[in-house]
Image (cartoon, rainbow, N blue to C red; front, top):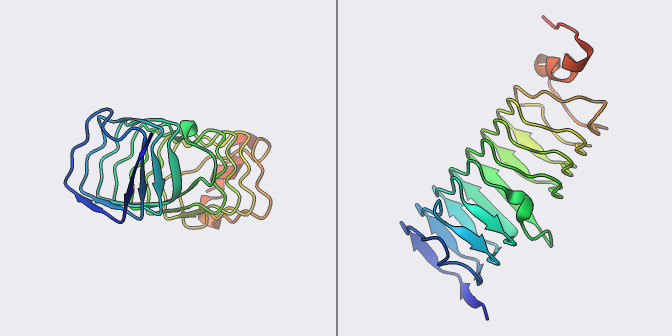
Length: 189
């Protein structure tokens, strides 16, 4: 039986490996918390905010993120592909997500603002109408993703093969056009 927590502010907590398992948090705010030692199993977060938290290397298995906002968080090397896919909705602001995985998730209308997304795995991910606002996408992988209507206009360092990724009505800046032409061996100066 899971425990339910509503409208609680958590500050400066350092969580151990299994302490949050089988718990549900709704409208909670986590500030300056460290989840890096956690191996989440069957945890649910609904309408929660994470501010200045550390998730580096956190293990996730059947975790539900339903309208969750991450602000100024370290979230490196986290595999979100194992999340509960029902009502999955997350947003990131000023976060470091380098080497994380979103493989095959439905992330329609997700926003990434001022984020580092270096070598992030978006393969086979539904990125329809995702907003990449001022993000570094160096070596991010988009093979077989659906990025229709995605907005890359203010982002940089992406390399996307239009033959392997759906990009209908996606928006790009002229300055970063080279990231779409790499597979054609075309040099843009």
